[in-house]
Image (tube, rainbow, N blue to C red; front, side, top):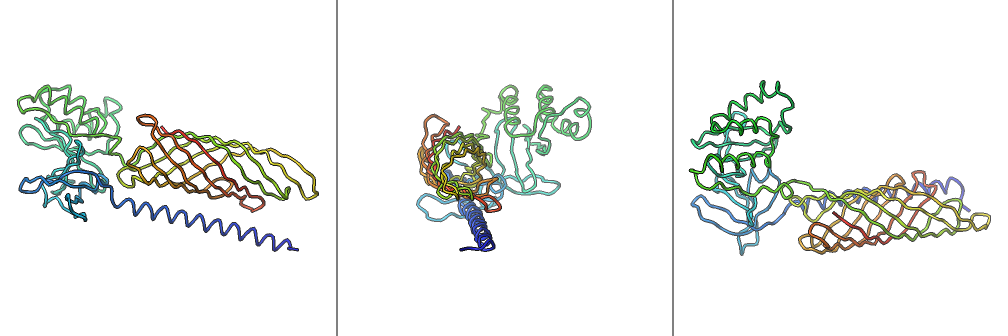
Amino acid sequence: MFSESDTFAVEITNINLLMKGFIATLLLAFASTAVFAQRNPVPGYIITNENDTIYGTLDYLSDEENCRSCFFKRNGSEEFQCLFPKELNGYRFSNNGAYYITRTFDVEGSERTMFAEYLIKGGVSLYRLTTDKRSYFYFEGEDGKITAISADATKAVSNEYEAQHGPYWDRYRQLYPIFYKDPQTLDKLRNAPRDAETLTAIVKNYDELFCTDAGECVKFLYDEKKTRKFQARFLAEAGWVFGSYKSDDYKDPNTHTFKVAIGVEMNSKRLAPALFYHLKVGYSHWSVSGRNDDGQYRTDTYELVQANLGLSYHFLHKKKSTPYLIAGICLPYFGVYGGIGYEMSILKSSKLQFSVLGSWNTGWSGDFNISYVNANIGFVL
């Protein structure tokens, strides 16, 4: 027979094994992110300093990295090469994607030659330059004069006093020589949030009204959903659980129950397009039947609210349907889970998921554990 100290040691050992599994899961997650973040291939082309266009594959990375360098693999080649601004006139992603050209701009008092994102080409042109510290927008007037605005002010001016004093007033005065033909445009810029979508729309409207002599205004694609680093999507799922609820009160407990959950999935199409991070909160109603130490048969019910934090890897993330692997941890009753799934498109932006997961949970003191297999069907929007 085991003594009480032996039982306690076994419980501690189980918790230690669980913690090691948790740490291994985290290390795998970080390693996966590092590996998959290295390449995000998108068709595109580069423009050489001799104005030759070469088609191939570009690595679509973060805004900061895209402004620093260009990773390009020409058609027929096996390897990416790293190209810097002075080696190219620019590069662009296919299907009217983001467009970067080599420009030299003043950044905080020093001249820097980088790849600037070309947002608007017209009588007034607009560029965005992103460094490791912040983003800047550069307005180029019809006479070639350039005025820069930092993206630090992400919100509109809240009152008239702010609009007439300090940095907001300075920006307004600096932009006057560029937008002097329309005071209303200046007012819009003075009060507008400093983001690419808003500023692009304002400049495009000004060019189409007052700069027609300069030719057609061209808006290069600025798709907020495609360019943001991380995107979130809502998910809801329901499933059926079969497993065991083991504690000091039962010798042979088995149970089956329903489960519902809601949550969000986060993904970066630019940094790790195949990897999804998810957070779900689920509810299940357990009816546990079994024999206790006295041999008596009994049934108890439990309400379980649990959060799942994990990640999944989608093998065919560019396809409408894809199998995936999923793993993570459970809280507050600490545990780990893992399994397989399949995702398929059912509407333009909606997905249907089917998954089979195995889970093992324990109380922090090790006085009970829940192990089960559950089959789920989920809807992602």
